[in-house]
Length: 311
Image (cartoon, one colour):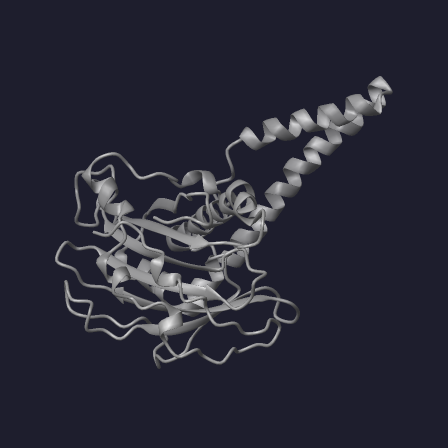
């Protein structure tokens, strides 16, 4: 896949097995008012031309005949500066192999966004990747879905932008995607709302940081050396990061960040064919921005060049 500038980039890949039925997971991910709650990469998602605000579907194995849905997205506070953009998405709920897939292409309105334009997909694989069963049910009878995403993007075009994306932005975006997937899992499996899961995460971080700070203060008081206290706090903080997270706290570490070996892993890592047939936002009429915090900007027109390996 072409990268950004001179430096080739590696597409982001995240995989997580979720104990829920395919219909529930489809509802939580394909409805924009649900999607924007668990996915920390967005604050708001609005579909533009679908009364049901749901990506259109076609018959099994046929996607070319469906009409993609345009959408607007926002990342930022309800009032104040925010990053906005537009995109197109489509989905296939019924396939002969039992999988479900969706695809999207997007482009930012502003040159400030670290994700200028990109493309990606979701795969819903019935049954866990490590289970021999593929009918969406584990050996114990509980339904499972392996939820997979793969996507890539172009970042900043100014000098140093490619290096900053490689060393900072891309790892952070990958981590945030994985964290959001586990947040979704807690919602689907345990009924823990995304908002409550966020508070669980903030509380756990506060406890870990507080414990490290307290250890540092005690050590400094005992030794009379402030430097010793700082070092102790740092060591405690590092070791606290190795402690497994609470079962009710979202954690990116629960997700796979590389495809599994074998044919099933290769299938999960390939973008569905409907992504290739999905026209980029620059090839569609530009929707009017819903907000004016950032000036609207037409996509560069190069989004169609961003492609993932197709299956």
